[in-house]
Amino acid sequence: MKTHIISIVKVLLLTIVLGACDTDEEVYQVTDRMDAYISSVQLYTADNRNVATQVTIDDANGIINVEVKNGVNRAHLKPRCSLAPEATITPKMGVWTDFSVSVKYTVISGSGEVYKEYKIIVVEKE
Image 1 (cartoon, helix red, strand yellow):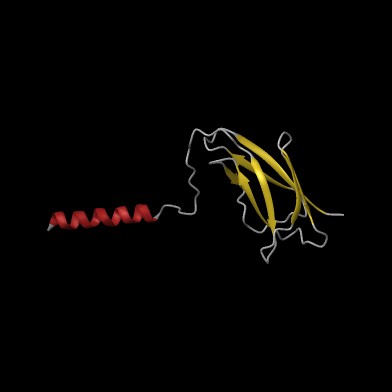
Image 2 (cartoon, rainbow, N blue to C red):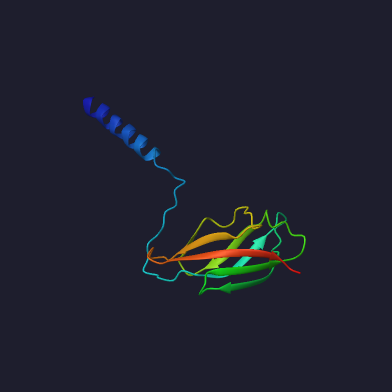
């Protein structure tokens, strides 16, 4: 009987410890990949239209210029991008973002050793 109670207490303690883990925290898989770059950028509106008409990526200086059509609400766009294999980006893409000002992103290589900063600048097409 006593061993049954001890086993139940162990299971309960294990459940409490595992349940206390923060599941919102991102987990990065470390690989040997050293590439950290953005190869493409798209900007989507609420009706899921990509409004980026021209994208210029200056990788050497970490500047991405994105041109959108006149009248696009730059303060409410959802960015998406393509990254180097196994790289990650912060802050997250795919969330509503205010591009009426430039926004900085950091790409982290799969190895976690290389960080590359980019500034995305969105302007209306004249």
